[in-house]
Every structure is written in structure tokens, then in C-alpha cells.
Amino acid sequence: MTQSEEQPEQVEQEVTAEGAEVIEDAPADASEQDAPAADSPDSPEEAPKDPVEELTEDLKRVTAEYANYRRRSARERQAAVDGARASVVSELLPIVDDLALAKQHGDLEEGPLKAFAEKFRSTLDSLGVKAFGEEGEAFDPEIHEAVQDSSSGDVKVLGTVLRQGYRLGERTIRNAMVMIADPAE
Image (cartoon, rainbow, N blue to C red):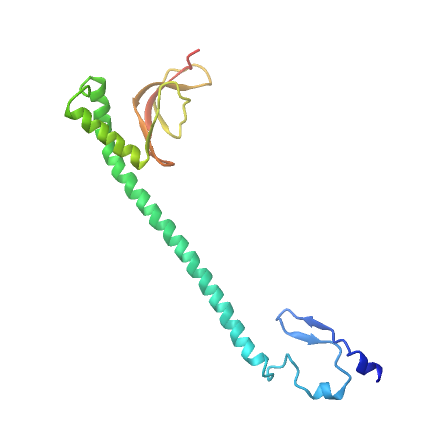
């Protein structure tokens, strides 16, 4: 046995930018040279592999595009639902204001209006509507609408709350209308 039969010659290969393999050292054996190269386009193994790889890549791309479309559609659908819910709740806020005034005047002590107010409030709570804007809270110009500032220092808190603000989840439906005052010491 000769040395070439014991150890097959190693063929160094490089991959070019196009992805094609370049053979630097050709095999010395004549029988290997006569055999079709594995990277030639005439190779029976390579011809079916290229279309399969191309179709696989196309399938992966289309699958990713469809998954992105589904996620985007779900987000848009949820945003539309949240927008509609916020719109309906904002139309109901004047009723909440009237019920708050009725409670201040003592009209909600008993009777059918008290039952209505409790049911209405529990319905808003089940939807996730939360009120904000209590006296003594720190003033935040993002969520509080100041109509008067009687504070003298840098620290500002809510004095009188003229109209409560409401949130639906993280979304502010209506800003609280307030008068700013100094913090109580």
C-alpha cells in the first residue's frame, strides 16, 4: 500500500461571498478527477438540493411574515377594542359626576337612586375604570389640569379637586381638574 492509499489527500475548501465552494488543491488521483465534482451544477446531488433550499428559505420567510402579520393584527384589534371601550366610558363620565354631586347633597342615602349608583359604580370598576385626583396628592401636569395655583413653594399638591380624573387601565380617559396648593405640614 502506498502513502496516498493509506491517507486520502485533504482538500482545502473556502467559501466565497456568493456561498460557492472553491477548491484550492485538486485531488491527485485520476479516478477522483474523472468523477463529477460535488459543487458543479451538473451534479445529481446538488441540483435537487438548491430548489429545496430555496423553497425552504421562502417558506421560512413567508412563515415569519405571517407570524408578524398575526401579531400586528392582534395588537391593532386590541387597540381598537381599548379605544372603543375608552370612548364609551368617557361618554358615561358625566353620569358619574352627577352621581357624585347627588351623593354630596345626600340624595343617595336610600332608595332606587342609591341602588342605581352602586350598580353603576360596580360596572365601571369591573371594566377597570379607576378614579384619581384626591386632595393632598402630588401635582402632576400630565394627568392634572390646574385651573388655579395658590402654592408658594416648589412642592405642589392638589388642593381642591373640582372634577376627578379617570383611567382605564394605563390610559387616561379624563384629566382631573384641580386647584394647586401648598402641602399641609
